[in-house]
Image (cartoon, rainbow over all chains, first blue to last red; front, side, top):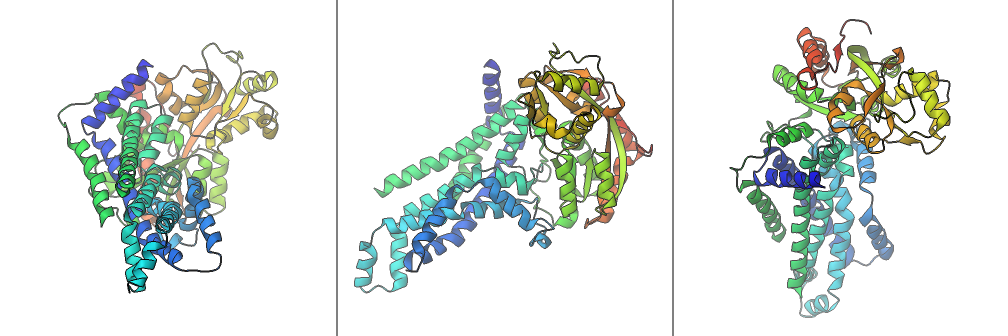
Length: 230
Length: 302
């Protein structure tokens, strides 16, 4: 136990003193997860709007499929992306495997269902009053959509943050398509896995505390947003 | 727009932690420890280079867990002005990456599979560059009484009593291959061993984690000497069986045929087998552990 406490103390020391290795891993992890989240939001929030504002056959089925994929195993996504971008795979000529971009690609796919699904929930949670009123006051369809989007912005932001939370804490994609290369594709989670395997407790705890801090920032922000809406 | 503000806030929060209190020094030992988890801090500000100026080597975990690659990597990078990406995996996975064309060079330790790899046209040549020995390690009280036995006898004894726990790599690595070879030398079918009971544990991870697992379970395991010595201080395990020709462990480097950087790959093979680096490999870890981890053997035809 005292060994564990000592490791925690050294870990806090490393964080407070701004250990360059710990923070370069944390910074890289953030850049990768933020890129993935931004990219996924850019693609899948408009897609969610398209799905929400149109009636079509199989819409309900589509929604339940999307929801099923909220909890798709990260290693499964990792494996699929590996097969896709390995040089022997269909996108092999891009030479993306074992690069930060490969992790971003995997994480975009990983969080796409969450961002799509939660955005649709956010839009439909608003009910039909606002769109109906907007239309009856003579708004065009585009104006109505923008109005609905702006009314549900906090919930959509929550969807984005949930996606970020999943991206920053996943390991399956990062280890399979990133390869945990020192100084290149090593992220908080893969570094922790390696550190524990090597019995390097203090360093792993330091990285774990940072990861937890990131998760906490996300969850507190989500909470604040949900309150501010009420 | 709002999401960018929040993304910015996230970064700002982390950076503000990073910048506060730069003055306080942290424990030197831990700094080294985290250096070993490994991180090139040198290239942080440099954007990722196009793949042509990066060379990828897939290495067996034992050459990674001992720290040998972290030691050699900066030297190679400086000498040839290339970014070397070191990926660690079991021999099986490393060879599979080579078959798929995802890495340029491979350093592994399984002679028959290396020869097959070359024969199938995936690798140019098998070039041995270092060797050491495998060890059967276990807790100091040696509950199964294996001390003094040959590797075959030790495995026979483990199998027939079925009481002492044995942790296998179980990951298709070179060490796992060696373990299978010893089972077969002892006259057992590997499948029978694998399914014979709870005493046989398939760990499914690298050499270091497997040693940690065996230590936690007071079990026996087969380990290469280098990783065992590098981990020894943190473990209660001791070598129980260390004599026997079957325990020879040769590391080879292979250039992958389909590499897009054939010249640089050849440079890496030459680097590992050069006299200067062979000396460094022979002396690696001697200062820290007081014993030679690897014996250089380039050109000896092993």
